[in-house]
Length: 242
Image (cartoon, rainbow, N blue to C red; front, side):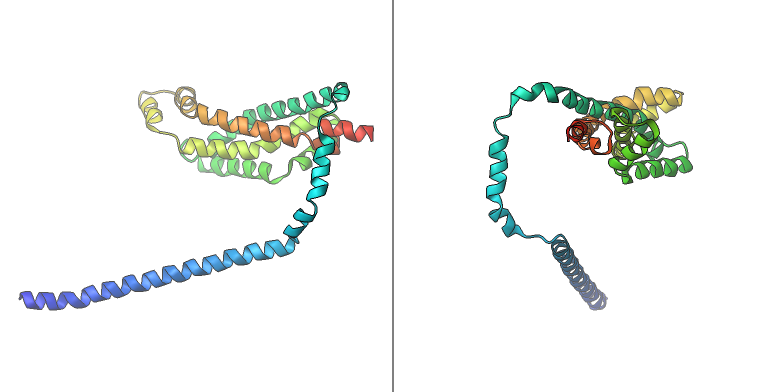
């Protein structure tokens, strides 16, 4: 009986080994195909953008000349730039605060673990995606036509565009938070608002602050170019002087 069992087990073991070998061969083939696809993507991208690394070497003198002429800064003209610089920073601050106020409710609806309904989940995700897909310069053009020239349309544009990044990252932070405090508050009979203020916010506040500071940095840099469409910032003063 033992001999019969050992004989019958051998074909089964050989079949398992054969299946494992074929699976490993398929995995190696898939990995090679993926590598070839990635190489092809990189090559075609270099061709389309007309990448010429040698031009960086031949143009190094021009870059060094610009840096040489830009240093040291001419502090004698500080009275001409301090107000546009302040306006640029304030655009970033206002845009970030407005984005946080609008993105936080959308993030709650867009988080799968706390959203009240699937319809609101997909609707909030759609709004967040649309706000992120439209560039901030396009938002600035729209608000300039609505409220006129000046820094206010730029601040509105940064606020709406910030919803895309803040809403997405806030929602992901809420989805990955520890649900034990939320479940405990729910079992005690706490209302939804109480669960949010005493359970959700304390759990995710450090992450939200980090994301908000990163977005503030992005908005300050973005506000530098909004003046080209008449939405305030340092570039607006440069265009007006020209």
